[in-house]
Image 1 (cartoon, rainbow, N blue to C red):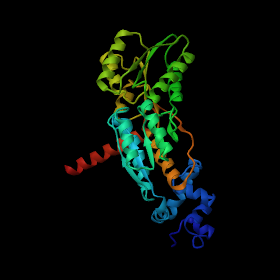
Image 2: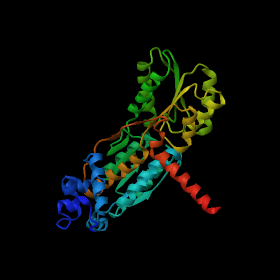
Image 3: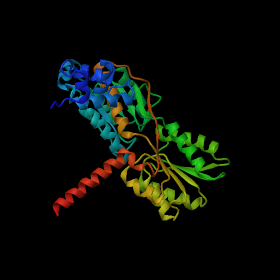
Image 4: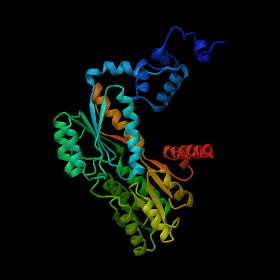
Length: 378
């Protein structure tokens, strides 16, 4: 009995066509669209991409990346990456997106030079200079220190070294593009949600990382503009900088809750939310003060389940990393024009849809794998 897929036998094209021509015919799209889908380029809808990939899997097709690498031999490039290691809950996801896409484009002859920094805004100017001196063709950068980085970015761009900012921006620089969830919109969404969760006239606060960082400052601005519009008489009584330090964030949040005993809500506009959760617990206010956080990682799950975290604004860090590499690779190898900005849509995480996010699925898979190994060890 024939093992060909039913669709192929019915169409009678199995032996007449192969590769991308067959995929194009089965998916009812152009060959160019198939090429964009198979090589993760932009310009097509995600639903179309998924349909094409499903057809490719069905016929057992995989693109000949080795041949593509040979064709790009003269256009091979080196990309520098400067992303913090701190707050591993967020940056691990960003790094995983970078690495996933780096493996793909690495088959096209592209090399990566890693110059991570330990903390956001610390040591990134020197790391950036090192990457420029190393002769890279492009740099993917989390701009934690935009004031000092801007002239360095401008100088690099002047030399033909393209700079793609990811997660947070250096907007005064002449960087090529930024990949992020637009921070003002991020804060505005949190402000609207908070305004609908707390009673009229409520007092709320913001826990930020560092207001010198573009991402944290604009999220604070968005929340500050949005919350009073959605909560009649609502007031933001404090904006606290925790500087991404767990102990500092805990102590300052604990002091805030003591100073403002009637606080109705807190918005944490950085992923460093665990010390805030602990401070609420220590004050006996877990679940009583509405808490809106940022992003998602496995350690947040118990706080969702207990009601300490009401909601979180998700920034798709893994996808940010993927897109940053993809844009840079396409620019350096195919001379594809870079858009001024790529703004991803923020997502809303609540206890009911918590299980749908990749961070939770990855944690569950890891737990299942650990349990399986333990059972085999018994």
